[in-house]
Length: 455
Image (cartoon, rainbow, N blue to C red):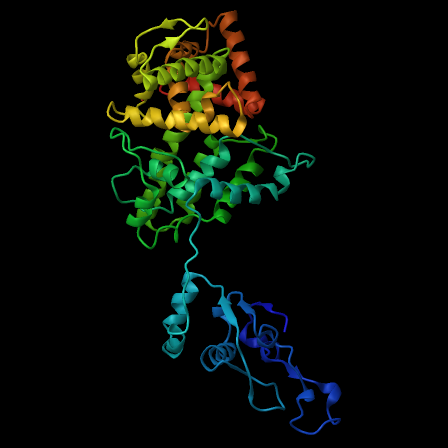
């Protein structure tokens, strides 16, 4: 016995039962009397997997003769001996059958296969509902292609938001569409992020989402292979024409793809709606932040300074004291500057209400303490907590939105304006964009009057 045996699917025309139960030992023919066990080789899959594991890949596509062997092993705990011997061997093993839902339903609809219903224990294997896990699968497909190899003549760059955009699209097609929780918030919550329902300030419970979800959640939706097909298609198109895959190109490619491949009108409408609403919303907010921050010199430094001020006030609020100056003197009100803290916390996409503010600040302090324990650092980065990072960046960007005036007209720009745009492009390049995709992004911001408008 080998313990673990993987059996590939077989077709009726080339099915050989010897591969399952063993074969006759031709070398010993005539040397031993009839019935001698040395006349056979117990080298079949069920013999090798006895006292172990037998894995049937696409097992439900096998012919009835193979299913008969399977039923005997499941019901009678025996596997017949190869000819010329008669009788059977005791079988004590674990059998796993890989299949898909369509094959399973087709198999069970045949009346003759009813005995298997009581002997199969069906286990669903859904698609990943965690966006970060789906992104790993997409990256694995991409990294195995020639487009991802930098030394290949077919090399194509990928914008930094592409893989997360694709992963979000996949999860959006797999989760339940009902309920009051917005789809994007549900996707982020499933990915382990502490999300709040917009306007309510209440945390979204992942366990509650799973409890309310139907049994079909994750069993349908876009497959990674379909995603990879469209990604490869776009990569082939951009060769020699920018050599960069962008979410703008993917957006149009998926619209065309769904129009050609989706025959169900309701599903087509839903997928188009995902692209038009949820994905466009996330894409615009992400790229809007990058464009605005690229137009501001020292954006990261300003965000860090704002965070330091906010953290000082949170600590003063927690200790019911005043913010201390570098010399140790108290400055400001006892309990911190409440209006300043609320201005940061009331981010419309986060929605921390006044009632939720104490709990939110306690979360911030816990995240800071955890960072200090893990890193032993005194200079805490504003990125230590995902929610406060978004709030800080929005607060800083709100004060620099006048930078959008650079896009008011494509002509009559001053030398200073052109210098700022050139510097902005280089900052985007440093973030992972190519020269071409950075120019395309800035051009999109210029041509779309609402691109930099806060909603």
